[in-house]
Image 1 (cartoon, rainbow, N blue to C red):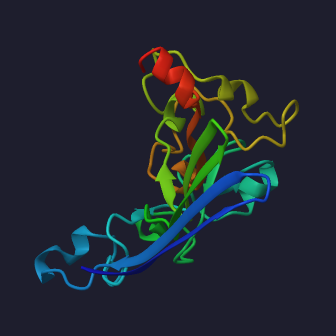
Image 2 (cartoon, rainbow, N blue to C red):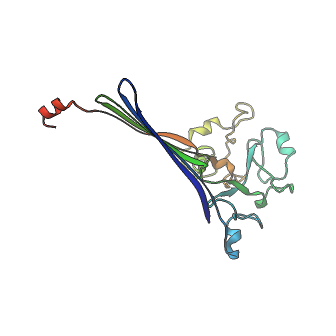
Length: 228
């Protein structure tokens, strides 16, 4: 396995004419990861069909079907390739190998958990007895698997006897809700929508406000009087 990356940290500290001290420190880092060698006996365990393995790709990359929207009309169903369980309101899977039938051969690489870059920013301000510090942190460009969708977007994919998520209330309906991207409610999983696909892979980028601290330092003459 090979990792190549770069990290940069930049800070600036100064003081204004009216007495505000400020200090900013930012950092950004990124890396590229790839698998460079595997024993011949296990190459096909990382990926799918012959010559479609993980060599040259990031470790833990996601491999599965490409969800290409929903079948919204009968014409969508009638003029598509053969897909077992297909029907109005069901997920349509991309025919990657273009052989006229959806099969395991249509699985492909659909993302990886490694971000393009990570970043952070520390802010420190001081004015007379007041001080403030804040910390922001985030990542950009990674993909995450949202398995919770099996419970929030489907009735029959996982645990039939459990409560479901409110996203089901926005499920596709050809008359009442034709623009929804949540598959139509079904009592059975004939379309095998529990299969791992890009439907469950989402953008994992985020920016978080991690910490905020505000303080006040008592004047020395007061803290000495109260013995602090």
